[in-house]
Image (cartoon, rainbow, N blue to C red):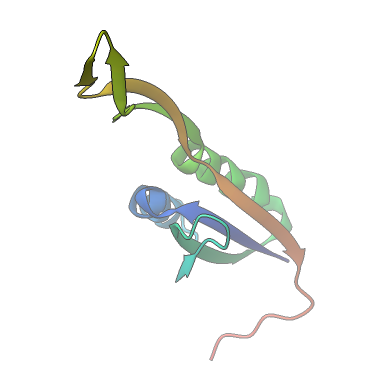
Amino acid sequence: MKMIMAILHKDDELDTIEELNRNKFFVTKLSTTGGFLKNKNTTIMIVTEDKDVDRALEIIKENSGERKTLTYTNPGLISGKGSIHTVTSVPVNVQIGGSTVFVLNVEQFEKF
């Protein structure tokens, strides 16, 4: 038996948990915060048979994998020929999402 602990981006929480539930995985959800960037995350815990680990990991990867998105940023002020101009926004590709997953051995599992 294994425990899967996955730390997901908050935006990926609903789709990931819904798909796991659809595939008969029971999920415990914890709201967590990242240490470095202080981003909102969701940590999910699943206990499953060894033979089902690969399917659970596949679902997590499909629903919470890294992806690129287009965001807009203000580059600041541009000066030239005695005047200062502001540039409203510049499109920037950024990578978001992704998950960190741990698979742990479970010696005993009880449900009361």
